Length: 486
Ligand code: MG
Image (tube, rainbow, N blue to C red):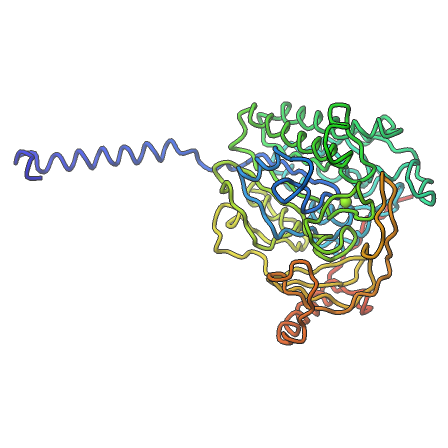
């Protein structure tokens, strides 16, 4: 302060202090408060494998929009679907519960007498209660009877297919060609029939158009937009703009169109000025249906695929984007599951949790950038209704002896016709260290009896809670699925 005139020695620091305070206050006032009711867009792909994005190693076609989304947000490498099959996986996503807690298993067929019990509270129910507009455009697959459809489960708007679009009279397996005609559902009413592959080629585009209209219509209030794309589940079909365009045949065409669809929705969010107030999540329901060969996706090297509890069945891509809230360009290896979507999204949106017990954990701290937290330590795997096939804790996975599906040892199918697989392969008990053995090839239980004992305890907890058909145990905390009146 030697250069300052004596009389100003007290005044000037005061000026600096005030100026500094002013700058601080200005910056504080300019920084937007975190949105209390962010929009939520949830993409849910069907049978897309872990390795089906360029950013996870896809070859012969590219997914530039998804790669950009990953670069602008966070990509998770240890994200698991709740079960490796359509209906069970969707039940868990929307309720935060293990699907067997709700009595939902497998893939529900047309006219299923069973569906997601409307007494369960879905993410749409919780967000609707908070004043959100709620829309689903795509595949429902939690029961096609009216009482189970989306409008009875928390959604305001629905346009989509009621179940997998291979459940139609053109199914390649003769034994399954008894399916009734496949129709779009508009709200609660049947819409136009999807008669052939040309009609099926319009599915992705139609859903994209509906999703964009929904954003435009509700741009002034918070919205929850659920986009469960029916593809790349077979039968594969793309619209004229994409058919025959990729070097990877129809599978590449379909992936290119799905990537375009995500890009269109993200562009509309930006166009409406909602970019920084919109949480976008991108997930797949289960791994690829490997016996469809060139019409199936890639697990990225993980073992087995759809319908199995090996990593190829349940490890799926997971991207999250929310500019200013979720770190950009981050890759996280933390274990998370589809069960965890509901509690986390509910928290971010200021919604309450369901009244009944759920299984998901809150990972908002991790989402927002605290990489020191480990929200989920353990996970029970299930497959085939209620058979405990494996449990996981950290990097360890204990697989129990069980009969199950394998694709290994069979020539895969081609051009839309499935190859064989078996449902009764006997898998032995094994302990895998996923840190050094993500392909689940090396059984190390002999070297780690302490880990086996620890994981056995987790399994006992699971069996007491949810039961286990393999050991003929009934769980104490399972609930009834919805049963149709007729
Ligand atoms: Mg699926």
